[in-house]
Amino acid sequence: MKAPEPVGGPRPTSRDVATAAGVSQATVSLVMGGKWRGRVSERTADLVRETARSLGYRPNLAARNLRLGRTRTALLVVPALTNEFFARVYTGASAVAARHDIGVVLYPSPEGIGPARDPFASARAALDGIIASSMATDALRAFRDTALPLVMLDSDPADPGSAAQVNLDIADGMRQVTDHLLALGHRRFVHLASAVPSWTFDVRARALATALDRPGVTVRTVPAPLDVPGARQAATRSLTAPGARPTALVCDDDLIAAGACKAVRRLGLRVPEDVSVTGFDDLALATAVEPELTTVALPAERVGERGMEALLAVLEGRSAPHGDLPVTLRVRASTAPPPPG
Image 1: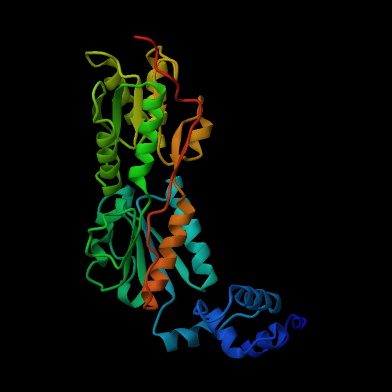
Image 2 (image 1 turned 120 degrees about the vertical axis):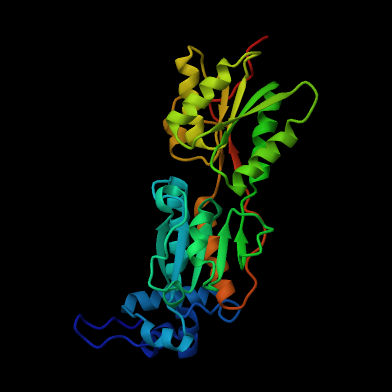
């Protein structure tokens, strides 16, 4: 491979990359422009990118953007930057974007809820497209009239306002939870349901209700805030309500599950000997608490990757990837057979 020029020497050109990699300049343009799929092998694309890095080559983005009529910037709208799940979504999206020389602007909805103002003088002039979580739907009001392509994450497939969607198999995740608990022998359930209105939480509620709709099984739904103190209070109410105590608390989120575990202990009960607790998301918190949480692992980085891949496909006139991303139940120490009686 041709050695890179010394510091201060001439800037490497696409011809230099082509010569060093043993390919044509057209191939270099396709790879560096992110249009190589279906035209260039993945091995050749990797070779071109590695050669470009070795030589210190950077494409002339200003000229390329002028030809394409694009800003090479995407907006990622999420509920809150403090949420670990969405931080991992950003990691996945930015990794794909970097391979295509696209910048990602991360924009949270104020305090995780409510509409947000357009962060630019004109989103249409500053952006190529938008990727957004269904939990930040209200924040999209500022962008609905821009005609920018919108990729929705974890959202209602019937929504006509999106150019593409990336969904997780949330319903299957809840089915895995209920199958696990039923197999352990649980028959009295409380669903600590997120009080935040969102399609993804509606799916969890429907899947749980369907799975537990069988003789001899009872389930009660108790709304819970998406924070540990509020979830603890909701769980306390559910455990001290009149009637037989539930033996399993099924939580919409790991934060809610952490609050539920606190409630169990403060009532002088034990997890899982007296009450089993399950979460959803498999955040770092799930293995930080004691006992460690049985929870549903969601591939957050893959959600971000698929979201950016879908946006690129829409911008290039291709079909976006289809199919829900699979989720996995992580069985840990917070679940066990119910106590006798």
